[in-house]
Length: 305
Image (cartoon, rainbow, N blue to C red; front, side, top):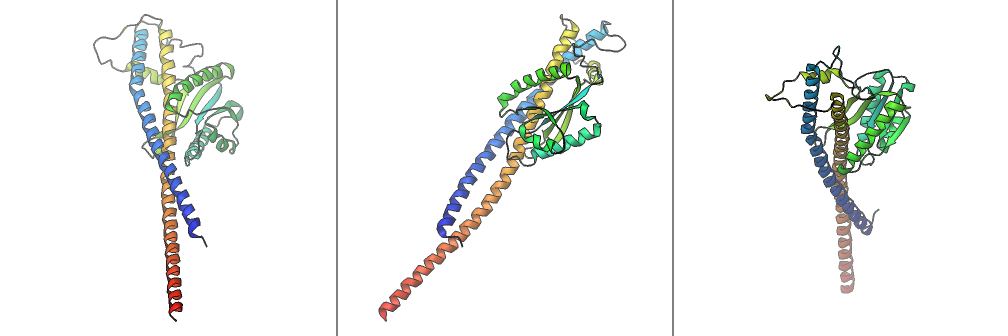
C-alpha cells in the first residue's frame, strides 16, 4: 500500500505534468489562431490573382490570339495539358507527436482516395510531408518516394512552399509526373477538422474559362503590355504558391487543433488522478493522525494506572 511520502511525490509529479499540459494547450490555441489568420488572408490574394487572369484571358480572347478555344501556351511544362504520365500525391502529416489521430486520419483518407483512382504502382509517386505520416503509409504497402519536413512555425511555410514548387517543376520534367494531388486535413473549428484533397495539376480548363466569363465590376478593364503567355505563367505560379501555402496552413492548424483536443483529454485524466491521489493522501494522513492520538491516549492511560 502506498505511503504518504510516495503519494506526495505522485501529487507533485502530476501537478507539474498538469502545468506542462496547460502550457501546451495555450501554445496550440495560439498556433491555431495564427495559421487560421494566415489562411484567411489568402482570400484577398486569391481574388487578385483571379482578377489578373480574367483581364489577360479576356483580352487575349478578344484580340483573337486563342484558337479553337485553347488557351495560349502557359510555359514549357504545358500546365493545362493532362498528358499521360505519372501521378504524384503529396500527403501532409505532422513532424511532432501528441496530436491524437491526426496522421492516422489523413493517412486512411489518402489511401482510400488513391485506391479509387486505380493507379498502377509504377505510375504512382507518393511524397510525404512530415515524418510521422510515413509509418501509416508504409504499413499499407506504399513506398515513399521522397519525404519533406513539415515547418514548425508560420514563418517557415513560405520557404517550404518555394522549395516544393522547385521540386514539382523537377518532377514534371525528370519523372514525367503530370498529375499532382494534395491530401491534407482541413480545419473547421478550434477542435474539428476533416481530410480533404486538392488537384494541383493539371489545371482545370473549365476553371479558367469560368474566370474569363465572370463580369468585371467596374467600367474600366486594366491593360497590360507584357506578352500574355508570360503574364499568365506568372499569375499561375502565384496560384500554385497560394494552393500549397493553404495546404500547409490548413494542415498545421488542424494538427494543433488535434493536439489541443489531446491535451484537453490529458488534462482531464491528470485532474482525475490528482483527485484520487489527494483523497488517498488525506485518508492516509488522517489515519496516521488518528493512530498517533490513540497512542498518546493509551500512553496516558498506562501512566495513570
